[in-house]
Image (cartoon, rainbow, N blue to C red; front, side, top):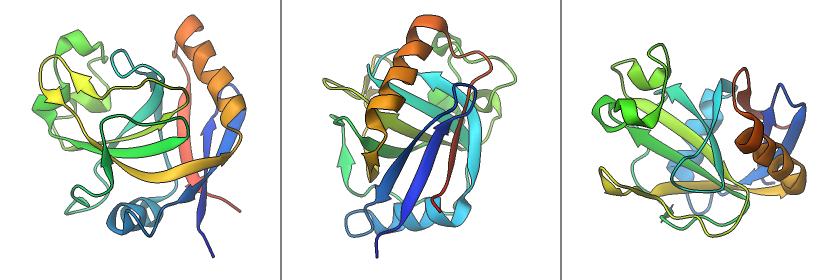
Length: 166
């Protein structure tokens, strides 16, 4: 039986359900599943396009490594990224001083993609492949509307929560 997670934008009261891709990304799925629930400040991507994400303290040591990678995620993809502090601490990225990006520690980025034409490239670093570890099966339209609202009205006070589906 497939494992599922619920991903929620808490302030907006919207959730979706994603199926873990255990066959394609077993290490990533295990790392995420074992660490749930996870919640963090929600962000809308500046560069990748149709992406919302949370930055979290590293929760798997060692991390899962690269598996089922992409630089062109499609709508419904849920991805895992691991970053060293120097990769995301640049002030140009717009993270507040107190954010996880400035913790000085390894950071995990859990992201979902809600629209087409995404490209994971960063002007400072080049290609940023992510592990696709889940696919949204229910609620993509609702989460996409809420994500677009985040883009238009801002992310302040919003949290993105990942938990095991019941």
